[in-house]
Length: 371
Image: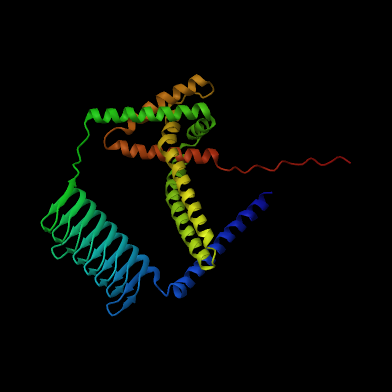
């Protein structure tokens, strides 16, 4: 039976690999034939200074470097996007860093950790960025709309400016109206911390009580696992946080590859189904992760820390109440509370994985039939 199970898992993995290879090949065919090379991906995508792309360009990679001309729209996703050439149409960029020193004829929509505009934007500029700089030579033909942690506007805006920032420094010129909200971050007072802790405690008690009442097994087994294998729980929990991010990324990539492959072979009706299935999978996984990390982990860790026996209902409820009070008190301590909260999440996630992981059962020996 165990050997059959191993063979089944091996065939499943082989099937998944084969599916990825086929869809990857279909994407490559699409890039060369259906899209005429307008879809480019790789470690670095470069449009050299003497090169012109006729039409739109879809680029994804470690770095996208546009030194030449894109005679259409540019949609780029990369670690770094640098535009020192010209884009005649609109720009949509998502990256760790975006640098626009060339020209964009239409609108520019940017989501990045850091954005620098020292070139020209023909129409509107929409930015969501941790740090944004419109340099002295930067020009926005129409409106500038932004949300940024820090915004430095030293260039020229031909229309209105609308945005919100933690820090706003404007030395440039705005032809229209200017409506910028500067968010002031205030240090919470002792009263604020106490109120927040009480609100969190009440929320945890409500959810924990519901689980202990309706599904006590899902409270007791991770709690017992934490007492029996605390360090294994911590290790599994840390790995699970990384695994969650990887799984979400793989679901998105696989859904995109499948959608492109199905569209190429004419199964357009299935493209929407794939997108919907991927969305449902992501929402479900995120909800389960959120429920376990935010509500489950403090409950399991708190009850385990109390050390009470869980044999009677009275002791279970006592462990729940006093355990959550202890966890909330410790994680509300300034500075160290955040790190303690992270440890609580890792301990809890690891415990629930160990408690409910599939276990191999030993084969039951068969007694020989007497002759």
